[in-house]
Image (cartoon, rainbow, N blue to C red):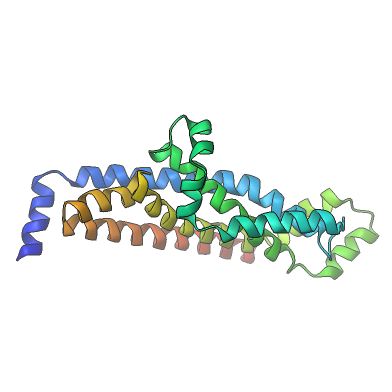
Length: 227
């Protein structure tokens, strides 16, 4: 009975609109952060492959430095990272709270993840294929552009979907310290004001977002495999 009354209160007080706005903020955070993380992380992952032990431009020093930086980035929990780079976030966005500000730590946290996914995906390409391209005089750029990327495109798409799912969770964490989105709404209304219907609705929306992202990622990856 109490839950029924709570849902009725949710509708009567027009609280569905804040949920819709928070969902839009979460999507904005995830999509923008994913875009910049892919733009930076993918080239970083490619360079890890090229400079690695099996790479076309082997360089132990470069690989060690890049690998260490990526490992450090992956080892810092998101909540700690978000607080630690507040001055940098404020420098970039002019503020340390809100949806726009949350995109900075979200992007930084995702870059090392994307780099490792890219490296792992490209290392699955058969060395014989690369050797054949080298024997035909292909340049490093041509091998990356026409061999490595097409051969592991489905894995890269699946990795992007996994990254987006992680960013959905991180965006909810960002709400705990003023990042906006569904996490912020769930804490302010669902926890602090004890509105279980709001909390339940935020959880349901987050689940739907994750399911939708994973479905789209899997579908796109399968299409690449079939082609």
